[in-house]
Image 1 (cartoon, rainbow, N blue to C red):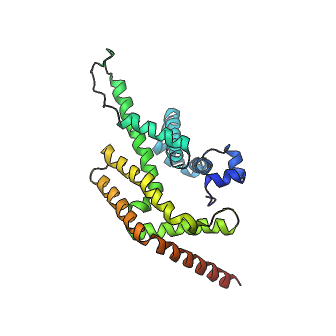
Image 2: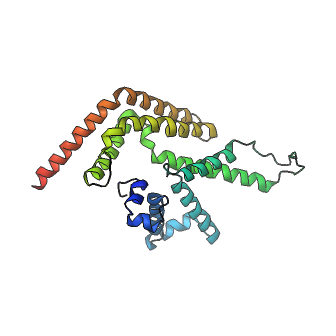
Image 3: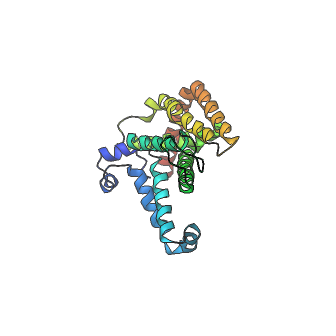
Length: 241
């Protein structure tokens, strides 16, 4: 990972942005690297456990692509596609075998299976999204730890002249918006799909608790992260000098 958001990679005309035509750059790069690694001869036995036929291989690859691409939360196009998939899977009545629709069509076993596959794909894609931000749905100290590491990563990019805005400027408000417009809706979908049982309530609970903590402690936390970053830089300079 370059440590830079896709927008910055595109702006800088980074070689990865050129390679992937300015679309979901980091995500496409992840798919490319991950698939190449899986194709390594060392993992032949693992591949045989995942798929047995060429049809299964193609389906697995498409599933991997869909899941990783779904983590590009900054892309309006990706967000729209993801929302459409979810609505088609969970905002419509579940088909019943043999049911006669208003148009006179009889629901077939194929349609039932297609609906199940659609739901499964939507859930898997959202599981990957949750994994991408898993620290936000765990205890406060876990959230703090990984939030700090991301802050330092963005700070490094700023110091290297690769980011135009100092991360501390918008970090507090940015996190609040992230909770409201991405994390809470994401956690609610995991609850709504019914796949995770009581854990669905747990995810929402952690997001809400961390949001409340951040509302009260966020400005102070940002100050602390800035101090810790400077201390880390000084320690590195002392060690290397």
